[in-house]
Length: 281
Length: 281
Image (cartoon, rainbow over all chains, first blue to last red; front, side, top):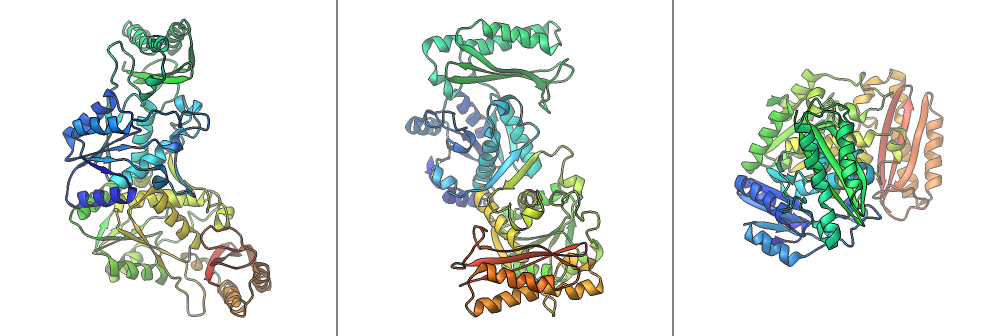
């Protein structure tokens, strides 16, 4: 495995690979890798000749009061994990190398970005779209894998690819969960032992919704109330949002007639956790 | 010469060319080609194996009260001119093929776009940046040529390439003028015979500034006043702006110490014309 530390070197290698007709797969990450990330690498590995993983904690997608500084980092561990997964190129640039001091071009999405996490994190998806456009231009991937855990991000990136005509196939990687059901996240590290147990309310509320839906319930309000009741009973848990939205447009749904995305964000103390599932009637 | 009418086909061809190691040059245009466009093609032709010209009147860069519908079009003539210039691929897509009905991703530049033409044409450079990003992804050029006539656009596109890391070399094509000095433009077609004569006030005011600058004048206000006086004496001419700005930051300059861009926009009746020059102290 080769570690590439500058954008210039990454792009030069990428263009050489393209000319050589190699199929390049990209898994963009912010590091502090867990089994969820590794599952994305395995998905990419199967479909490409050259597997590129990027590790870059992107300042542009953090708000002023968010956890940019505190975001967990452990490059040596990440490097070992990438090596184990057969990664070919590990792209690990510095912030100053990725963004000019007077950077002024941004990529914005304005139909899917205002709801769910976008409502609580203004500017977040602008930061995501911008860095993903940059990574696509630097790595020139034929395919890129993004996790379904970040459901809204995934749909926005699919839109980015369509609307700006990036020649990149987007592959959706299923959510990977801990044995008890908690969706894997680098931010789980922030949780105290008690919070870690209480954090199960996210996945449990989704299981409950799936069950009610299986029994025929189609009223979004009923399903959301059931989730809210479960989460409200948990100490420290504070609901950021619980939404049931059309799976494509992300518009709020009253009665479920087409595929919907059930998504929630809950604060456990200072830590904001998200989870979701898709219901298909 | 081959005419390609869909984005899908263009991108497939572009990726094949990339894999074959061919150097691709792009000249993006809105058609109604004149000698200025042809000079850009000749510049590109010298440096590439495969010359692609795009003709697309991009609705996203026209304001609601601008001349989108009236913008002159003559595909057959354009086709013949491209053929003469040795163009290999002429990309000529329909609007519906370029933009999905629910397109929601946009590329924005927010340091250089608010002044000069950006002040009179809100949203214009967002439309330009978005379509150029799309064209770069569809044509995958190694180099692209843009004219210095659109000085602000050129600098914004250089910024776009830098900030989103497009692997595209931008080449600046000098302004091409009619024998009497009028900068070539597809919009010159709108001018009546009298307006056509009066339109010389743009290039004449720039010649005057160059002369004063050559004599040692460094006060921007003095130079701008000289331009304004010349133009105000011309019937029908209405000044949109006359600006002297830093050539890189486009920030207004009082005393000229570094390279500056002298840019102006003047309405002749319903027709808005632009011109510019760079002064290097």
